[in-house]
Length: 51
Image (cartoon, rainbow, N blue to C red; front, side, top):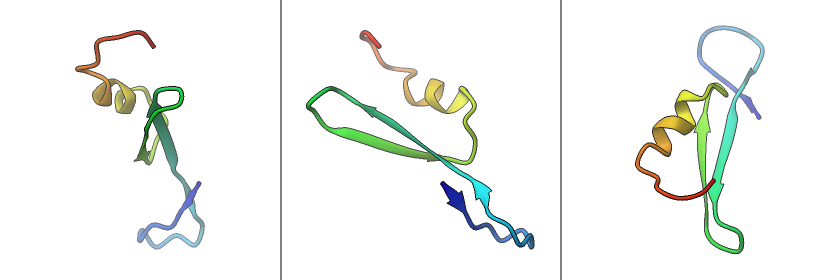
């Protein structure tokens, strides 16, 4: 999704929504400015289950 920032540039920057959830259950959306793996790794660091 396009994100407006206050860095003085006239164009938008890409932003990303990561979705975590279970089939038929609740979902959590996390916004990140990048799509690097450190975001999901931090979010799922205490997760114990099957992905």
